[in-house]
Image (cartoon, rainbow, N blue to C red):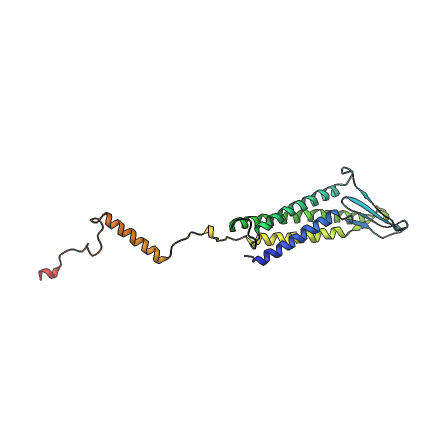
Length: 239
């Protein structure tokens, strides 16, 4: 069983994963322009994110354009938007459940309720990490495939940006935090509510003797001790 310190460590990892996933969702540098040709005459750098495209010009100007149309976006970009938003929502739900399942807190009910909350929060963190890993992997595959395609002009080639790496690291944090919370309550727990309280052996023996005594008092002629069951005559009486 993981200790309370391990649970706190998992909570911190999950918190870092949630923060990283939220930052990666809003960052505009999921892919950046690759300096493989002479495409830096008018623009210094181009970046494309899930929600906007940004450009730095050689004159020092900086401009960003929001992506208003959803249907005009490619499938991998629409999927990345949806999964990253679901990742943030599911991770936030897991964070609320984790605060109830921590052993060092006084809220969240008894030990059994805390165990269930910890397992549920671990499942939420693992699912959120999976939802964060899928768009980052798909997005990276699309960028690398287009980069290696010889039919794509050099001015339209991009490289994975910093937001993709933030998403990968955040997914790892969420996975580790979720596994820690799941393993902290994976085995059977013997809490006070799961135990059958028995009296001490001496007290139990005393209770049994009292019950036998009460039965003998209720039926005095039917309860004979072993000494009373002996026959009243022996061979020595006739010798």
